[in-house]
Amino acid sequence: MAEVKEMALEIQVDDGIRKVPIKNMEGEEIGVFYFRPTDVGIIDRYNRMIDKFDTITEPLEGVSIASDGTADELATDEEIKALHESEKRLYDVLNEMFGGNMAEAFFGKMNPFSPVNGNFYCENAIEAVGKFISAQFDAETKRMSKKVNKYTQDYKKGRRK
Image (cartoon, rainbow, N blue to C red; front, side, top):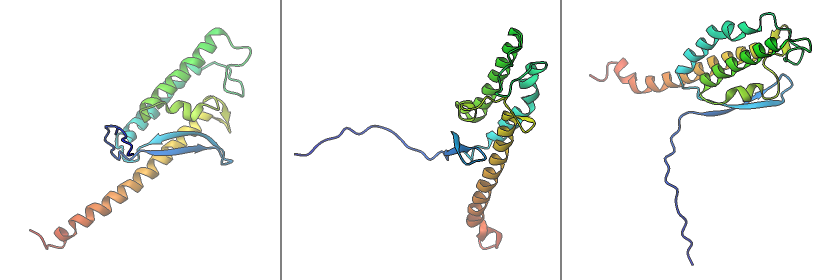
């Protein structure tokens, strides 16, 4: 006897999304995020985030931060509130940049304001993201350039009019 299965109505479109693991310097996966290397708007969103970074960390001025990125045990309620405000600002701008819950992917295992080699951990993560975006965008641009050249080579050689 034949079995009839109901088909789901859906359309699948390749939007260029890629699953990207986030690894620490030891090669251990600390998170995963989804990225579209062909999303030309991501460069503008990244630059806006960089421009906002001082505003994001502004509430931290005068807050004593412990080695785990939290307010130290002598912190006042105001300092703790300021730290949480900075975290929220950072998470909001990262989630806006990537169009999803990307803050959790980067900071689910480590507080963004943990000190790492003289920087906040989030600064290291943001710098790595910038380099990644640039490299991915350059690679996609080269692929597109090859395709455009393929279709326009006859025009460049004067064969078509």
